[in-house]
Image (tube, rainbow, N blue to C red):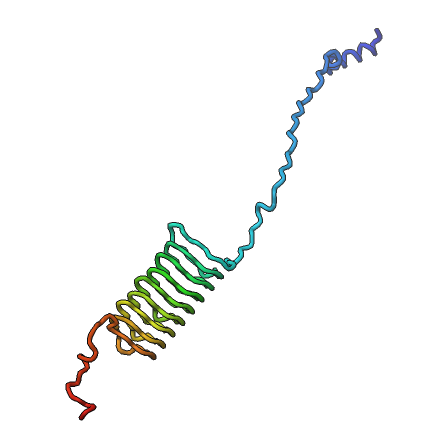
Length: 223
C-alpha cells in the first residue's frame, strides 16, 4: 500500500468516517395517520324558529258556552260578536255585540250592545245599550251610561240611565244619579240631589183603601 493510501486511511479513522460507513442508518419511523371522523350535516327546520303573528281575538257570531270552574274574562283586546252563555262569573273588559247570560255574576268595564241577565251585575265605567235583569242586586256606577231598562231585587244607581227601573225591594239613588224613565220599587232611598225625569211609584207592595185614606170628611160636591 502506498504512503498516500495509508495517509487517507488514517484521516478517515481520525474523522470517524469508517465507522459511519459500516453502521446501518435506521430509517425514520412513520408517524401513524389518525383519520378524523367525517362531519355530519344536520338540517335545521327554520320554521321552528318563526314567530307567528298575533292576531286580535275577534269572534264570529254565535253563542259561546263558558262552563269551566273559572271566571270567563273578555279582555280589553277582545271583540265578541255573538251571545255569551256561562254557568260562572263573566268579567267583561272588551267589547261585546250580543247578550250575556249567566247563572252567576257579571262585571263590566267596557262596551256592551245587548241584554245582560245574571244573578248580580256591576256596571263600572261602561257604555251599555240593552236591558239589565238580575235575580238579586244591580249596581250602575257613577261613570256608567245605560240605555235600557233595569230589573232586579235591589238596584243601586250612581250613573246615568235612560230607561225604566223596577226593583222588587229597594232602589238607591246617589247624588250623581240621572234617570230618564219611570221608577217602580217598594222602598226608594235618595241622597236628595239625584235627578229624575219620569214617574215614581214607591211602596209598591203597600195595600190600603184609597177611599178611606183620602176621605176628607166633608161633602165637597154638595157644599
